[in-house]
Picture 1: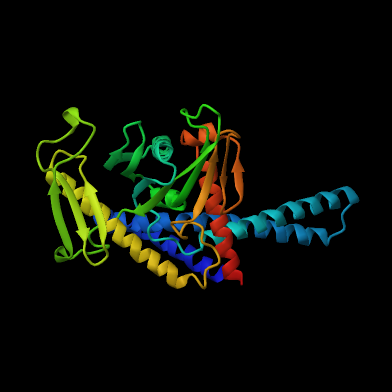
Picture 2 (picture 1 turned 120 degrees about the horizontal axis):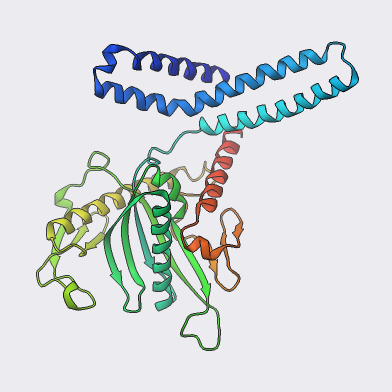
Length: 356
């Protein structure tokens, strides 16, 4: 590992020299490419430099302990060795995590699809709660959101809603949210106070470019129809809604939120691209399932991953066994602690697999 780190450190120094070269500074495209490459190496090199400093200090303290010292000073050196050893171990673990293979999709924007599951109207209301939770989280992060398609319930919930989130590392943070989310609470219409259980499914898809996946136009049937809605001015009087059917896979995408047929078609194709790319990733994951111990973040989309229990004010993630007693703030978008725990668990499993 240390040999690899030395190579990365030398590469970082080389990039620094190239970036400061007048020839590079006059070429903005080349400069941007080199700076991006350097930025990717910086966290590893910085951690490695800190590791070297701690390692040198530890060796110096161990050498000092071999000398004739009075008892008080010897105890002080022993305590310093203990602290430096712990720090060295912590840095080694951090470096191993930074050296783990990265998900090529981590920096991508995402398309989030939420569908009401079992539970009737309550499931639709819960889908609306999850929508607001992710929108609030995105707002806290300073990310941009845009609705792609909505299918509302008359009582304020959603049968289905698809939207995009654009922000640095959006997929790396939200990829663990895919799966079945379950809610337990007393509905407003339940006079006896009986707890009702319902669910909603969430799919987080990396948004892809044309270069990531090509769609043969001959494989897609395009149908146009009149938008439906709750009435009033929201209902279009022209055939602006678009339905795409990908014939080889049977995937169907409908989009009717925009008044322009062209805009609806563009949005529908973006979702179709993301769905096809996700299908490809899922097939890859299935092929590698025998060798992979952890399913966190890339497991079965039908798996129940989390329960939101309103009477007890708790939210529990079943994959990592974590329960947080702060449901009100969690549903308001304060989900960072849970997302960080999922990432840490995933990294720990990957480190364990490498060591085995």
